[in-house]
Image (cartoon, rainbow, N blue to C red; front, side, top):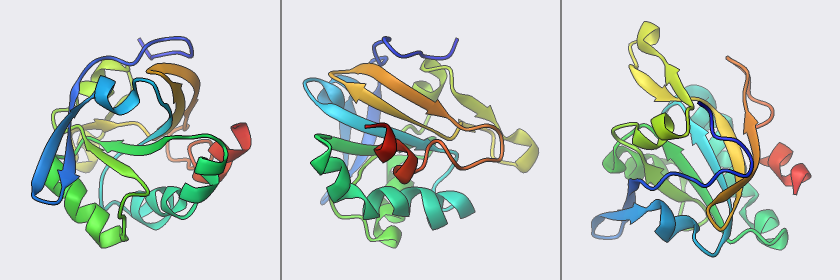
Length: 160
């Protein structure tokens, strides 16, 4: 079942890039007491994710701060090392918190798994964005297959 507005995010452990390697972060550590935007991509280094999705949130980071967003986070079913390399490739400093969901546990628990086996990518995350307040989903924007509209940084900013 897909997570809905009003639902609390599931408690999982993410792997996040850090200066000296990777840092484990739990859902609570990321979202408790904060208003956040979380967006998910099917895969690091994939075309739409690299050309439009992540760069949009990187470029709009200050605009999200002006809308009282404490954290902008990106998750993908990739390990933390891949997320770290992708952040470096995309020029991400601290504008976007990268959250590796290497085993797809978060994607599964929120009910937003994408079966990309036909493309040789296995189980991934659907493309979506959500506004989260103190660990509770306020708004959820799930893309239709093959689209990139409602999870874009510009669209999410308009919803705040």
